[in-house]
Structures are given as structure tokens and as C-alpha cells.
Length: 449
Image (cartoon, rainbow, N blue to C red; front, side):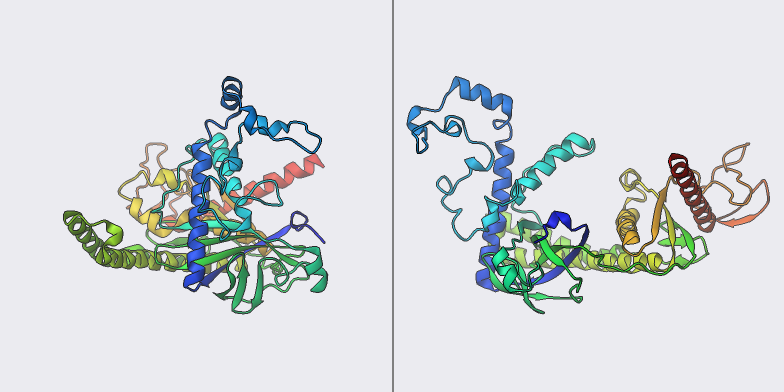
């Protein structure tokens, strides 16, 4: 039976989940347990460090009454040392961690449980990425709560059902088109928005269950296979450069424009109205000395605000998916600017417009969709792509000329006197930069081999 690490191709599948009230109770228990374990690991991270732990073991050794012995009467060395990590979080110490919890919450056939993986990943981000801060405690009031579990295949069950792992013979499996089986939950209703992959060998690796502020439940499956999930498309012999801007969402090098839908701006007034209502109900509850969780009016309005935010997010994601897929399918090469949205958001005059348009999410979609369909996506440095004349290479701001501002949507080159539309000229420069970058990398490969 092939292991999941041997399968090179991956795909994510996100489904809407419809649990009954009993299943929802178990789901909440697992969400709370996962958050509790993560926070306990983080709280104990200082005393669990090797230096501090060794000092504590020497200064305050474990009493002999707590030592454990093997069958031969020899002392088990682990019992003479303080437990660390998950060993400190036991059901004896915390009785509410009972049988309703997922078995992978504490033990896993792999090296670490999923909660430990997330905990260690947070510390790795802190050590390797300078912009990532120290891991923080997960709040109970977070709008999105989640926990992860793993799928397991037993050799006996696999042999009974075809002899190979599939979507239908693991501990997490599809029972039919509308039901999936999850640990401790049994059959649970789902909504499939697409057909399941019919590759020769597809197995479920990890599963993440999420709860949103709107009350929705989703399950995300990581599928692995020995064959690609998408077939490479035939060549179109077309290349395109795209310039992202706030006037319109993007302009291509072949003079096509995609309008900016402004999803947040369209619902901004409606959202502000309900946020004022929510604020008034919070002040009223505080004045009457009632906790917010017990205020029904506050909780109802909180749900309304969450649904408005969810509507904006869903519309934006749908638009970005459709636009990115259309670009990738119709061009062999797509070149875009490597925009640093985090730096651009420091401009308070444009921060709302940049956040509303979702540039970074769009570039991420292009990056992962390109190899799925056998396409090439390149990001280039955006420096001087707007200020440079595509025809003669003259840079605005040099030789006594003024740099173009955001108000200059059209301009004429003072050197060659060619009239340019700002965004189209930038898209042409971006495409040229990407093609030069690819040519340079091909020459380096030829020099190596």
C-alpha cells in the first residue's frame, strides 16, 4: 500500500458541512480541546526548553515514589525526568478531555499530532521569517475556529475494498455523494460543488474542520494522488503582461481591461449601519450589567454583521478565481508585478482600495494555478514599469522631466513623442521584463549543462 509521502500530486477540496446538534456538540469539544492544547504547549514552551528543564531536573529531582520500573525491575529513565509537550496534558489532569475527542488529538502514527505540527510551525515562522512575531495564544473569541485530523488506512480494510487506498475506504471516507464519515462524528451531510476526482489512486491525507462567525461549518480535505488532478492544456502561443491598479482591476498588454468590482465599497454603508446597531446593543448590555454572550439582541446583530463580511469575502474570492483561471487557461505565459501589499497599505489614502481589490490573493492564485494547467507564471520587479516608455525606454523623472503621478492616466513621451495610456504601457513593460527574465534563466541553464 503506497504511503501518502510517495504521492507527488496534491489538491485541496473544501466542502460545506451540515452537522446535527449532537455532532455540533462534539465538533465544538474538539475545537476547544485543540485550542486548549495549543495554548498549553505555548504556555509551557519556556519551562519545556532543554536548558531550563535540565536545571529544574537537577535542582528539583523527581521523587522516587513517582519512578516507574520495567518487567526486569530496572528504572525507566523517562520517569526520572519531567514530562514535556503533550505528556503534561493528560485526561487525568484535565478530566474533560474524554472519549469524545479525536484520537489524533494526543496520539498519531506519525511523529507529531496535528496540534503539535501547528505549534512547531508557528515557532519555525518566528525563527526563519523576520516579519513573523512570536506565537500568540489562540483566543476563544476568534471569528474562525479550526482543528485538524488525519486519515488512516488499515491494510485489512483496503484489501476488502479494491486493494488500494481511495476516497471510500479510510477512517475518513465518502459514504455517498452527500455524506462523509469523520472521526467521532459518524456520517455527516456535506454539499459537493464539484465531482470527486476519478484518478487511479487518490487518498485523503489531512482534514481541517472550521467554524465561521456566520455559524457555517466547512471541511477541507487534502487529496494526494500518483497522477495529476488537472490535465495540461494545449499551447495557445499567447503571452500576456498584467498591470494591477485601483482605477480598474487590471489592464493587459493586449489592451484589455477588467473592471474593479469594489465589493467592499458597494456594501460599506450597509455594513456601517449594522455595525452602529451592534455597538449600541453592546453599550446597552454593558450599562445593564449583562454579559454579551447572554444578550440575544447583541448576538443576533453580531451574526448579521458577520454575514455581510462573509458576503463581501465570497464575492471577491469568486471574482478572483474566475479572472485568474481565465488568464491562465488562455495564455502560455502570464507576467505580473511582484507587489508588496503590506508596504502599500501604509499609504492611508489608498489602503482601503488596495485591501478591497485583493491583489496578493490574486497573485497567489495565478502562482498555484499555472503549473496545474502546464502554464508559466512569472513575477517581476515593478520598479519603473509605469515611468518607462515602452517604445524608446525613456524614464520619466530623468533629464529634468517630472515623474508621473496617479492622476496622469495618459501621457506623451518627451523623447519619442509617442502617446501612451498609462496602464497599457506598464503592462507592456511588465511582459517585456518577464520575457527577458525567462531568456536569462534559460541561458544560465544552458551554461550549466
